[in-house]
View 1: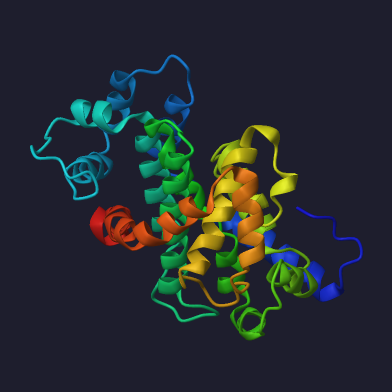
View 2: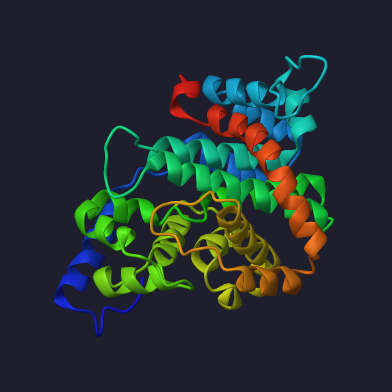
Length: 303
């Protein structure tokens, strides 16, 4: 958490409320933490993962729904959990588990607050789809591409505590025309003493999501500050965020599409103009497929 020195009294108060709010957030379910622990071990096997998931009927159902969904488009239905785990791969299982838990904890669409949760998740989903597609173009192994998807899906989570705690004040910030760049982060800092990227990093640490996802959530607006190990992923997630805005998929308060910034970052990441144009053409189709993934991780599907 940033230093409180130099913040106004109202900013200090806001930081304390945010700290308390995050501390009260539910921890990730025991099954989720066990899955993450197993997936992070170098000696883990599909059998180890099956032993944990098979004890959770909801998670078992979600894994089987995912492998049999249009997202993968298999001809023959898979009914065996061990086979599904082997086919999906541990990284995909891990990211399904993370997404399911996070969305179920944070996705409260029943209340109208500072911004539309529907638009928020649509932007996050679009960013996740773009990040996965860009990772594939870069030659990232198939089993590792889902981490880019989840990085894009979760990158803006830090906005949710601000949305929940300060609906009026945050709503006013979001409706103020942005001048581009990190203008939203600057206005959040002025009002609350902390911005949504910092809050996202705190949430990632609380839930022990790992260094890569924490860096994506914390540094997607300041990629140069990311740790070296996560830098490539963070840059691609930041580029995916820009690409979603380029496609017109954004949330209230987001900075307007900046073509120069996108061109600069895409060049830095090694993407050509043809790559970026191809992304625009395929994003709509891929977004529809990924909506299935999002539906599978929703509270309604989990019941």
